[in-house]
Length: 59
Image 1 (cartoon, rainbow, N blue to C red):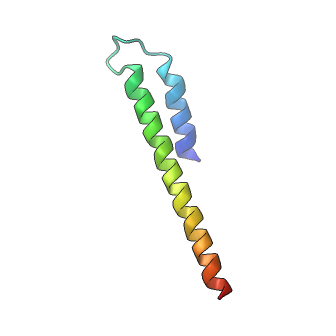
Image 2 (image 1 turned 180 degrees about the horizontal axis):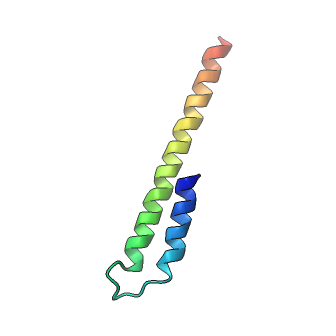
Image 3 (image 1 turned 135 degrees about the horizontal axis):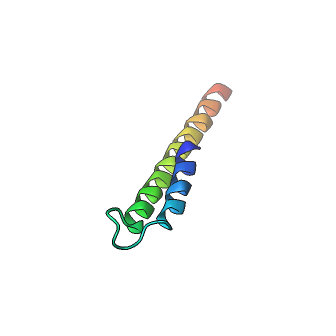
């Protein structure tokens, strides 16, 4: 959840920097996107692990 919120904040930060800034908007957008992808991978891993443990307990 924290990674998703951080990614959204990076999206908002993107609007505040111009093209000539030291860190321009594209770098911030790419960082935010990377954080969102990482959050998705972590979420899917937890979801698969939870489903796997439930099926083992049923047997």
